[in-house]
Length: 237
Image 1 (cartoon, helix red, strand yellow):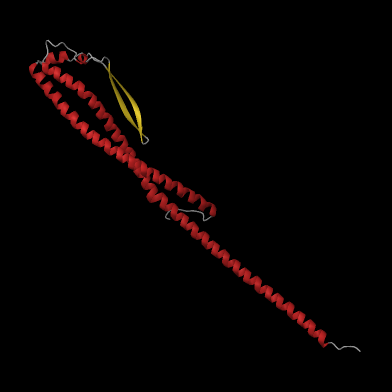
Image 2 (cartoon, rainbow, N blue to C red):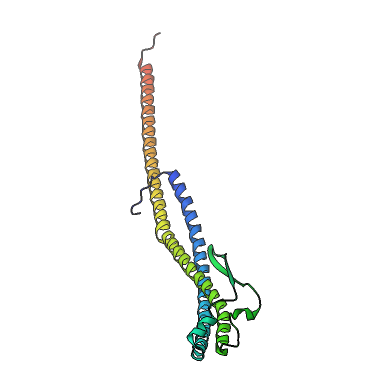
Protein backbone atom coordinates (compact mmCIF):
# COMPACT_ATOMS: atom_id res chain seq x y z
CA UNK A 1 0.00 0.00 0.00
CA UNK A 2 2.66 2.47 -1.10
CA UNK A 3 1.96 6.19 -0.78
CA UNK A 4 -1.51 5.59 0.68
CA UNK A 5 -2.56 6.81 4.11
CA UNK A 6 -5.90 5.70 5.51
CA UNK A 7 -7.62 5.88 8.86
CA UNK A 8 -8.20 2.36 10.20
CA UNK A 9 -11.85 2.90 11.10
CA UNK A 10 -14.97 0.95 10.23
CA UNK A 11 -16.45 3.98 8.47
CA UNK A 12 -13.37 4.23 6.24
CA UNK A 13 -13.54 0.48 5.59
CA UNK A 14 -17.16 0.76 4.47
CA UNK A 15 -16.31 3.70 2.22
CA UNK A 16 -13.40 1.86 0.61
CA UNK A 17 -15.49 -1.25 -0.01
CA UNK A 18 -18.07 0.87 -1.82
CA UNK A 19 -15.31 2.55 -3.80
CA UNK A 20 -13.88 -0.85 -4.74
CA UNK A 21 -17.24 -2.13 -5.98
CA UNK A 22 -17.69 1.00 -8.10
CA UNK A 23 -14.16 0.71 -9.51
CA UNK A 24 -14.67 -2.95 -10.41
CA UNK A 25 -17.96 -2.22 -12.18
CA UNK A 26 -16.35 0.70 -14.03
CA UNK A 27 -13.39 -1.51 -14.97
CA UNK A 28 -15.70 -4.13 -16.50
CA UNK A 29 -17.70 -1.53 -18.42
CA UNK A 30 -14.54 0.13 -19.76
CA UNK A 31 -13.11 -3.22 -20.82
CA UNK A 32 -16.32 -4.04 -22.69
CA UNK A 33 -16.23 -0.60 -24.31
CA UNK A 34 -12.58 -1.05 -25.29
CA UNK A 35 -13.25 -4.48 -26.81
CA UNK A 36 -16.24 -3.24 -28.80
CA UNK A 37 -14.30 -0.18 -29.98
CA UNK A 38 -11.47 -2.45 -31.12
CA UNK A 39 -13.94 -4.55 -33.12
CA UNK A 40 -15.47 -1.45 -34.73
CA UNK A 41 -12.00 -0.02 -35.37
CA UNK A 42 -10.74 -3.17 -37.12
CA UNK A 43 -13.87 -3.28 -39.30
CA UNK A 44 -13.31 0.38 -40.19
CA UNK A 45 -9.64 -0.20 -41.00
CA UNK A 46 -10.55 -3.05 -43.35
CA UNK A 47 -13.11 -0.81 -45.03
CA UNK A 48 -10.53 1.99 -45.35
CA UNK A 49 -8.01 -0.39 -46.93
CA UNK A 50 -10.48 -1.69 -49.51
CA UNK A 51 -11.88 1.75 -50.37
CA UNK A 52 -8.43 3.33 -50.58
CA UNK A 53 -7.37 0.70 -53.12
CA UNK A 54 -10.46 1.51 -55.22
CA UNK A 55 -9.88 5.26 -55.00
CA UNK A 56 -6.20 4.99 -55.92
CA UNK A 57 -7.03 2.79 -58.90
CA UNK A 58 -9.73 5.18 -60.15
CA UNK A 59 -7.48 8.21 -59.60
CA UNK A 60 -4.84 6.53 -61.75
CA UNK A 61 -7.47 6.14 -64.47
CA UNK A 62 -8.40 9.83 -64.12
CA UNK A 63 -4.75 10.83 -64.29
CA UNK A 64 -4.18 8.77 -67.43
CA UNK A 65 -7.23 10.31 -69.11
CA UNK A 66 -6.12 13.86 -68.23
CA UNK A 67 -2.62 13.06 -69.48
CA UNK A 68 -3.98 11.89 -72.82
CA UNK A 69 -6.35 14.89 -73.01
CA UNK A 70 -3.49 17.31 -72.28
CA UNK A 71 -1.49 15.65 -75.05
CA UNK A 72 -4.34 16.05 -77.57
CA UNK A 73 -5.26 19.60 -76.54
CA UNK A 74 -3.22 22.68 -75.92
CA UNK A 75 -2.69 23.76 -72.32
CA UNK A 76 -4.57 27.03 -73.00
CA UNK A 77 -7.59 25.19 -74.41
CA UNK A 78 -7.59 22.71 -71.54
CA UNK A 79 -7.41 25.48 -68.95
CA UNK A 80 -10.14 27.46 -70.72
CA UNK A 81 -12.42 24.39 -70.84
CA UNK A 82 -12.13 23.78 -67.10
CA UNK A 83 -11.98 27.41 -65.97
CA UNK A 84 -15.65 27.92 -65.05
CA UNK A 85 -17.33 24.94 -63.37
CA UNK A 86 -20.97 24.41 -64.24
CA UNK A 87 -22.10 22.13 -61.42
CA UNK A 88 -22.16 23.31 -57.82
CA UNK A 89 -21.87 21.00 -54.85
CA UNK A 90 -23.27 21.26 -51.34
CA UNK A 91 -21.49 19.40 -48.58
CA UNK A 92 -23.01 18.98 -45.13
CA UNK A 93 -21.80 17.09 -42.10
CA UNK A 94 -23.63 15.34 -39.28
CA UNK A 95 -22.32 13.19 -36.45
CA UNK A 96 -22.94 9.56 -35.62
CA UNK A 97 -22.32 8.18 -32.13
CA UNK A 98 -20.31 4.95 -32.05
CA UNK A 99 -19.61 3.79 -28.48
CA UNK A 100 -19.62 7.41 -27.21
CA UNK A 101 -17.40 8.53 -30.12
CA UNK A 102 -18.93 11.18 -32.40
CA UNK A 103 -17.74 10.33 -35.90
CA UNK A 104 -18.48 12.58 -38.90
CA UNK A 105 -20.94 11.66 -41.65
CA UNK A 106 -20.59 13.70 -44.87
CA UNK A 107 -23.55 14.31 -47.16
CA UNK A 108 -22.78 15.18 -50.79
CA UNK A 109 -25.46 16.89 -52.87
CA UNK A 110 -25.15 18.40 -56.38
CA UNK A 111 -27.20 21.38 -57.46
CA UNK A 112 -28.83 19.52 -60.34
CA UNK A 113 -29.35 15.82 -60.94
CA UNK A 114 -28.37 15.82 -64.62
CA UNK A 115 -25.11 13.96 -65.34
CA UNK A 116 -24.38 16.31 -68.26
CA UNK A 117 -23.99 19.25 -65.86
CA UNK A 118 -20.56 18.06 -64.80
CA UNK A 119 -19.10 19.16 -68.12
CA UNK A 120 -18.39 22.92 -67.99
CA UNK A 121 -17.51 23.14 -71.72
CA UNK A 122 -18.86 22.40 -75.16
CA UNK A 123 -18.02 19.06 -76.76
CA UNK A 124 -16.99 20.44 -80.14
CA UNK A 125 -13.62 21.90 -79.17
CA UNK A 126 -12.53 19.34 -76.59
CA UNK A 127 -11.14 15.84 -76.65
CA UNK A 128 -13.16 12.77 -75.77
CA UNK A 129 -10.46 11.82 -73.29
CA UNK A 130 -11.26 14.99 -71.34
CA UNK A 131 -14.90 13.88 -71.12
CA UNK A 132 -13.77 10.50 -69.80
CA UNK A 133 -11.46 12.16 -67.26
CA UNK A 134 -14.13 14.57 -65.97
CA UNK A 135 -16.72 11.80 -65.74
CA UNK A 136 -14.31 9.51 -63.85
CA UNK A 137 -13.29 12.34 -61.53
CA UNK A 138 -16.94 13.10 -60.74
CA UNK A 139 -17.51 9.46 -59.81
CA UNK A 140 -14.36 9.07 -57.72
CA UNK A 141 -15.03 12.28 -55.80
CA UNK A 142 -17.85 10.70 -53.80
CA UNK A 143 -15.63 7.74 -52.95
CA UNK A 144 -12.89 10.13 -51.84
CA UNK A 145 -15.39 11.84 -49.59
CA UNK A 146 -16.45 8.49 -48.14
CA UNK A 147 -12.80 7.58 -47.64
CA UNK A 148 -12.18 10.83 -45.75
CA UNK A 149 -15.21 10.09 -43.57
CA UNK A 150 -14.18 6.58 -42.54
CA UNK A 151 -10.50 7.54 -42.13
CA UNK A 152 -11.54 10.31 -39.73
CA UNK A 153 -13.79 7.84 -37.93
CA UNK A 154 -10.89 5.42 -37.58
CA UNK A 155 -8.66 8.19 -36.22
CA UNK A 156 -11.25 9.26 -33.62
CA UNK A 157 -11.88 5.66 -32.58
CA UNK A 158 -8.14 5.04 -32.22
CA UNK A 159 -7.84 8.06 -29.92
CA UNK A 160 -10.82 6.87 -27.84
CA UNK A 161 -9.36 3.35 -27.65
CA UNK A 162 -6.09 4.77 -26.32
CA UNK A 163 -7.93 6.86 -23.71
CA UNK A 164 -10.06 3.89 -22.66
CA UNK A 165 -6.99 1.64 -22.49
CA UNK A 166 -5.25 4.10 -20.15
CA UNK A 167 -8.31 4.25 -17.91
CA UNK A 168 -8.61 0.45 -17.83
CA UNK A 169 -4.92 0.11 -16.92
CA UNK A 170 -5.18 2.80 -14.25
CA UNK A 171 -8.11 0.97 -12.64
CA UNK A 172 -6.63 -2.51 -13.07
CA UNK A 173 -3.06 -1.86 -11.98
CA UNK A 174 -3.31 1.18 -9.66
CA UNK A 175 -6.67 2.05 -8.18
CA UNK A 176 -8.17 -1.41 -7.58
CA UNK A 177 -4.97 -2.98 -6.11
CA UNK A 178 -4.36 0.07 -3.87
CA UNK A 179 -7.94 0.02 -2.64
CA UNK A 180 -7.78 -3.72 -1.97
CA UNK A 181 -4.52 -3.24 -0.08
CA UNK A 182 -6.07 -0.43 1.97
CA UNK A 183 -9.04 -2.65 2.80
CA UNK A 184 -6.70 -5.45 3.90
CA UNK A 185 -4.70 -3.00 6.02
CA UNK A 186 -7.78 -1.61 7.75
CA UNK A 187 -9.21 -5.12 8.27
CA UNK A 188 -5.97 -6.27 9.89
CA UNK A 189 -5.88 -3.19 12.11
CA UNK A 190 -9.50 -3.67 13.17
CA UNK A 191 -8.91 -7.37 13.85
CA UNK A 192 -5.84 -6.50 15.87
CA UNK A 193 -7.83 -3.93 17.84
CA UNK A 194 -10.58 -6.49 18.41
CA UNK A 195 -8.06 -9.04 19.67
CA UNK A 196 -6.47 -6.45 21.95
CA UNK A 197 -9.88 -5.44 23.27
CA UNK A 198 -10.83 -9.09 23.85
CA UNK A 199 -7.52 -9.71 25.67
CA UNK A 200 -8.06 -6.66 27.89
CA UNK A 201 -11.60 -7.73 28.64
CA UNK A 202 -10.45 -11.22 29.54
CA UNK A 203 -7.79 -9.80 31.85
CA UNK A 204 -10.31 -7.46 33.48
CA UNK A 205 -12.71 -10.37 33.87
CA UNK A 206 -9.98 -12.50 35.47
CA UNK A 207 -9.09 -9.62 37.81
CA UNK A 208 -12.72 -9.10 38.78
CA UNK A 209 -13.16 -12.82 39.31
CA UNK A 210 -9.99 -13.01 41.47
CA UNK A 211 -11.19 -9.98 43.44
CA UNK A 212 -14.58 -11.55 43.95
CA UNK A 213 -12.98 -14.82 45.09
CA UNK A 214 -10.73 -12.94 47.47
CA UNK A 215 -13.64 -10.96 48.88
CA UNK A 216 -15.64 -14.16 49.30
CA UNK A 217 -12.68 -15.83 51.02
CA UNK A 218 -12.36 -12.90 53.40
CA UNK A 219 -16.07 -13.01 54.19
CA UNK A 220 -15.84 -16.74 54.80
CA UNK A 221 -12.88 -16.27 57.14
CA UNK A 222 -14.70 -13.56 59.09
CA UNK A 223 -17.78 -15.71 59.33
CA UNK A 224 -15.68 -18.65 60.47
CA UNK A 225 -13.96 -16.51 63.11
CA UNK A 226 -17.32 -15.32 64.34
CA UNK A 227 -18.59 -18.90 64.73
CA UNK A 228 -15.37 -19.93 66.46
CA UNK A 229 -15.61 -17.04 68.94
CA UNK A 230 -19.19 -17.89 69.70
CA UNK A 231 -18.38 -21.54 70.33
CA UNK A 232 -15.43 -20.71 72.60
CA UNK A 233 -17.33 -18.25 74.81
CA UNK A 234 -18.22 -19.66 78.45
CA UNK A 235 -21.83 -20.50 78.91
CA UNK A 236 -23.60 -19.02 82.05
CA UNK A 237 -25.73 -21.30 84.36
